Figure (cartoon, one colour):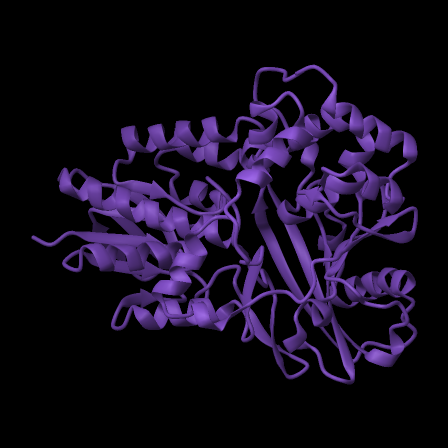
Length: 459
């Protein structure tokens, strides 16, 4: 008899898992269930000022291969575009300072550009340079990104460079994010060398030479990837608007329950956020409790359109970061029409303004109009904007950013053991588990498909 697999979740992770099973085992019946009316999850592209503008991620990182490989397999590699600029700014004591050259995830590897930038004090720059001479002081256990940076390079590097950058990617507090998972490049460099700076420089020497940009996207937005991936599946049993209410286990099968029906199957790939997976796996109490312990942060993204003549600060970069210490609601601003030339026209500029991160839920308490007004006031003050908004759009990503606390990998390993013991045939994949970002989620989707097919061979 043919086997049946149910994929719960129609984001990039679930779609990748679905595709991989179909490619490797066409005789396996695969059903995908998505609660919302559309596929794509956190990848969403809609029209703004007559252009296709992303509401979530607008690019993916190329340092890992999985997104590039998927684009090549789907015939999309010729459509990829890179940002026009990599320059960026950080707000320091109310003034914009250009980020210095030589940063790796916010860590300075060149001290002269750091001194010239005036992002940190001369004393803090000298303190950062001590990293080259300090003895190895690794505490010998999991540590946070902030803990690693503070002990090697001091507080100002952590607060004004690393936390604004890595914190904005994760919507988190780097003092509470696992270094090995949130910044593996930094953690690896620190483990292999006494000096973090020396370790990062050696990594750069070993990096393969090439001209590939750090980030890539699409002129029609990241939704192009989802649209093409779904089309590649052809006739497929994909059901949107179908929330799953529970996953239970019978003697010989798993049962996926929805509001309309129940589906018996041999395996389930659960490609949902951890807090949703916890609710669906209530029958596996141990796994559910552990999943519930994974904290999540919420972010609001306000896309703003202005007349070009009303913005007096030159938008000569990709955007600006706002450290926590500035006390603003705004956490980051992407200068979208400078970063992506295809967003630009002769009349308007487009900014994407972010608010909300771990420990700061002020944006959640504001209605859309209030949120736009508050962020507009802050951004207009920083960039010297005199005119009114031409158009605006609010995108809210509630509990969308998992927070990898130190020891997160051990927690996930324990959850997987619980499932093997009490709910065999259920596999987890997605941003809540083994990596955030589009490439990591594609990889987890593929890996969960491989694990599922291996499991089916045992039945």
